[in-house]
Image 1 (cartoon, rainbow, N blue to C red):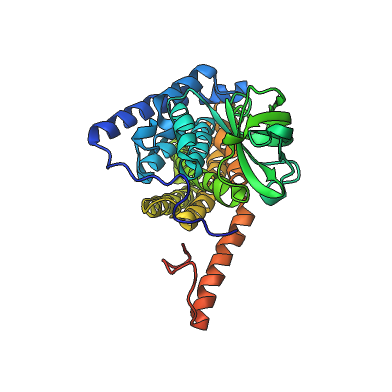
Image 2 (image 1 turned 120 degrees about the horizontal axis):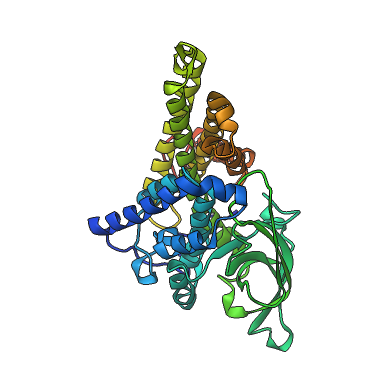
Length: 414
């Protein structure tokens, strides 16, 4: 995949640093949502859907696109502030964190690669919650191999200069059941392209997904596009850049928020397991007095702390501007997903029957964490990318040639 240039059609300058009152307002909005999620996330999971009223309140809060510049309706949160809010939400409800992730993914792609007209038309509506976005990339035969998508964008007869016809099928679209607009990956004349498709256009069909392993409240759906006509002006960036630039930017933003969400999940599981171990007695012995229980708690705490530090390093790298911090984000997502999976597994073990109860936060995170190890780049694929960067960097160093990716800290390249 070619390197993403430092700027593109949607290049914008950074807003001034946030004032303390703005940060305080965002923190207050997040606290309200976190409290609601803590009280009701288990019910949302059992019911198989985040309620529309909760989704509307979250969208209207602006948190889902809080990192957008103020001129588009955001508040310009820096990456670290966005990460911390995401961790707090993710520690309670992965579905609510998923709404933040997908809205932010589509907004990030538009901000970087959309034209001025596209940004002005779409970003304020995403920021204020008027529109809920979905990212439609995965297909039956194109999961990790997104270059193999079969969805097609074709010019529409004599009006081809003004309209495109969208045909294809997409799977596992987060909030696809209720989204108002989809950023769809397909091909145009054999080249990867990305197009915004309004959900209410004729030919768009949704198939809700229920009872899946995790993310049960995320209103996931499979989509069909049967000759859907959209204005050509809704193509984001020229054909050929749809995957390597537009969708790559969306996925990079997604990995960042998933990483921080997993940090929150891991820390929540450590909290639940340690609280239970410190208060639960087996006869006259505290559960936490057993050496094996202490070992599990220690490993989970160390994994969660390590994931947080990698996520923090990714946030610092991303603060340098658009296109920066991708390798750090990849490593943070990999480590955080692993930490969430391990911490939730051990928390359920320590909690015992309480961890298997329908309202168990650790049990819900256990199921959701497995999904986190798959989405935005499966763990095994991510390992290959990390290893490739290592071999490229140290191979160039051994040969005395310049590494085109540029040196950074060990194990990380730009």
